[in-house]
Image (cartoon, rainbow, N blue to C red):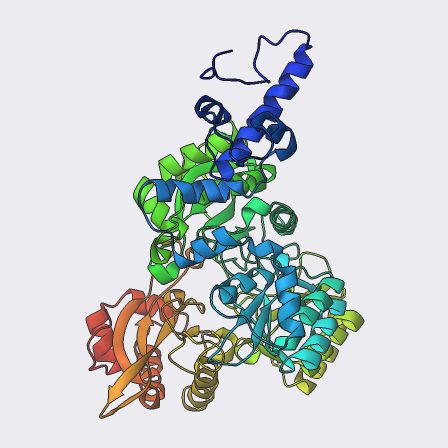
Length: 623
C-alpha cells in the first residue's frame, strides 16, 4: 500500500466481512475521526501520509483508533470554537475557560474550595455557575445558589427542604425569580457543596442553572388547571428539562438560552420574550392543515435587547416540540458567536442569517422538512387576564380553586415558605406553582377551604388581592445582591408601592417593573411602567435614579402583539420618582375613556409628547 493512500477499515471492499460487520466498522471509523477532529487532530490519512505520529513515540495510529472510541457529545462545542480560530478570530474569555476545562467536570474543584473555605477566583467564578453557584461579590461576599424547577412547580416537601437549607447555610430567605425559579442567597464559601448536595437529595437538580446554559424551562403557572387553556404544557416542560439534563452537548452554549411553552390559557407564559417560545394554537376544520391543537414556534426573543420572538412559520404537533427545540439549540451551539459576548445570543444569529436559514439548518438536524402554516390561518389567541396570577380563581377541575399569592418583590422568609407548604399540604394537593411575576399559586383548593386559606395567608403577612400595585410589582435582585445593578431595586420597589398605594386609589391593575441594569432581569421593557436603574449626577455626587418607560406589553396581552415600552424620561433621581409616578397615575385616572380603560390602552392612544404633558414630565426622553 502506498503511504498516501486513504485507509478506512469501515469502507466497502474489505474481504471476509459480512455487510453488518462492514457497517459497524464504518460507524466506528466515523466516530474515531470525529473524535480526532474534536481534539484538533488532522484526519488519520494525513497522519499516515506524513509518517508522523500524533503521540510522538507512542502507539501506532491504528492502535490509537482502537483505544479512542467515539467522540464525546460535547465535542460539537470545540469544533464550533475551532471554526472561529481558523478564521483568525479570538475566542471570548469565557469560551477560552470552557475550552480549557469542562465546567461539568469540576466537582472536585467545588469540594476543594468548600474544604478550604474560599470562593472561586478568575474564570472559576464563571465556571462555578454551571453548578448553580454564583459568587456575587462585591454586592455580597457570598454565593447565590440558583435552583431549577421545570414549569415552576415545587412540592411542599421541597419548599420545606429549601427553607431549611436557606436557614442552615444562607440568609434565611429565598427570592422568586422572573423565570419561575428560586434563589438562595448569602451562602458561605464552605457551604457551597453542602447546598448543592442537599438540593439533589430533595430531587432538585440545578446543574446548568447559570452561565451559558438553558435556563429553567417555563410554562403558564396555571398549566393543567386553567379552564381556558388549549393544552396542558407541563409534560413538554418536564420532557425538555430531562432531555437537557441528560445531553452534555446542551451545556456550554455561546450564551444563556431561554425556552417557554404557552398553552393558550388565561395566564400567559411570556413565551415571546424567550429565545424559543412555543405557543399553542387551534387550527379549524377546512384551513388546509390537520384540525386541532398545535404549537407555533417563535425564535429570538430578548426584550432587554429590544426584540420579541419572530414567527418561524412552523406548525408543530405537541410531540414534535421537544425534538425541534433540541435541534434549534444545536444549531445555535454550532453557529452562535463565540467571540463577542454582546452578540452571542440567538437574536444576533438570526440577524445575520434570517429566520428561514435558521429553520433550514434546524431541519437538517431533524432530518426532514417541517410543516409550515400561515399564522393568519390559526385561530387568534385569546388575550390573557393581566392579573390572573393573583387572587382566587376557579380551576377547570370542578369545585377546585387556585390562590395567587402576592410576595413582596418576590422574597420569602423561611417561616413563610413553611407556612405556604403547610397550606398546600392541608388544603391543596401539596404543590406550589412559581410565576414569572415573582409570585406563586397554591392550586387544588376546595371552595369550602378558601376562607381558611385567606386567614392563614394573612397570618403569614401575605396578600392575595390584585388591587393596588403590589400584585404587579416586579424587581430584580438589585444592588444589595448583584454587582451589575445601579440601584436598590427591591428596596425602592417596596417604598414606591407603599407611597403610591397611600396616595392614588387604583381600580385597574398596573405592572411596575424595576430593573437595575440593561440586562433587564425584571423585564422592564414589557411593563406598563418600566424603570431602568442608573446613576444620576447631582452636584458632585452620583445618586441612584431611573430611566422611565411606559406602555410595554407582551404578545398574549394584546391582539396587537408585543411592544417595547416607549421612553418617557431619563435620569429621574429616586427621591423624585414617587412624585413623577403619582402624576402619571393621576393623569391616567383623570383622562381615561371610562373606568374600563387600562393604563396600557391609555398610553397606546397618546403620543409620547402628549404623555409627557399629561404626566408633567420636563426631562428629555431616554435614548
